[in-house]
Amino acid sequence: MAIRNIRIIGDEVLKKTCKEVKEITPRISQLIDDMLDTMYEANGVGLAASQVGILKRIVVIDTEGGCPYVLINPRILETSGEQTGQEACLSVPGKTGVVTRPNYVKVRAYDEEMQPFELEGTELLARAICHEVEHLDGCLYVERVEGELMDVEDLEEE
Ligand code: ZN
Image (cartoon, rainbow, N blue to C red; front, side, top):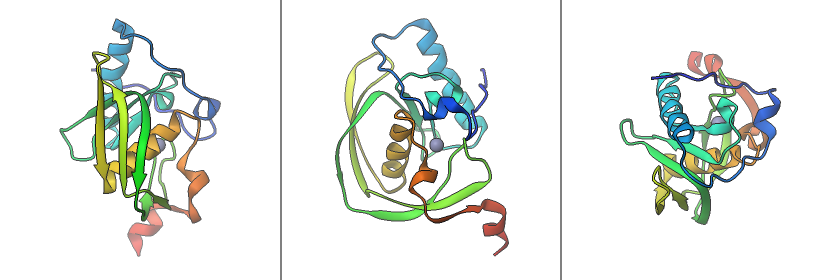
């Protein structure tokens, strides 16, 4: 188990576009294992490779706890509906903001054996897929926040 350092907003690496993965090497397998460990350690529901400083198109997502998805070279095929709710990011610690996202997403990606698959998600899973895929293109959710970015602590006091 290896926990990697999560890069924080302001770090230039978070603004960079990640490159497609061409093949699974031992280094990539190790990266994926470490990303899962790092996400769980930080109590996150998703993590993109750029958040640990690696510019590869890999994201891990687990919105249910114990049901992780590894998406390599993910491409969103279809979206529909709308949801508006609180969002947060491990690279923007202590903050939260309201973001509108599709309520349904269908994504095509490759798994850890480079086998293609499709995944459909609604609600939190749809939100997480959109959020993580945007990381791969150097976008943070703070650019999409409606109104102001809030402190999580302030929110809990209310
Ligand atoms: Zn994020």
